[in-house]
Length: 166
Image (cartoon, rainbow, N blue to C red; front, side, top):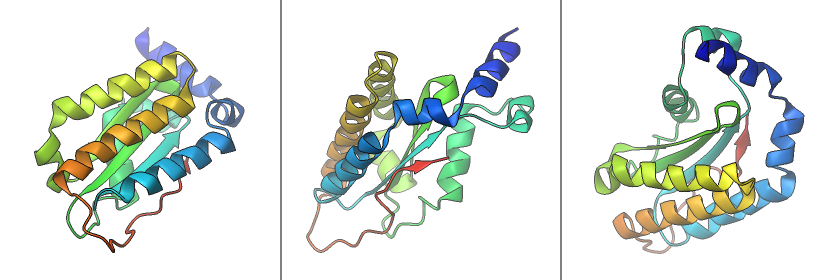
């Protein structure tokens, strides 16, 4: 029964719903938050919104965490000089947020803190505050990165700041 509910949540998800939750103004604000945060640390933050999974992914029982890890790899977020890339992955149809961090930052922050940030973002999203939830989440991730990888000045931007809508 749960599979059927999840299947229909994904089938009914549309680009219109994604644009309603993440209009261009929200995507621009996310880009600005990532860029501002990266001035305070040497980490690299990517933000991805995926509307839904394919039927094949659903049949394979692919969860949001595994898909986030796949996207982390696909976008090469791991490909940073200091192993400090962080992916914020939103699977809109499942109402899930996942943070995948490269080993350099993950060992500094830990799974419990990443989950707490995800929960805070998800809480805002449930209230319909996609802009606020996204920016607050990025700010909290940036604070963790600033603690572990403070800016030294002159850092290069190894990953695009623009959010990706899949």
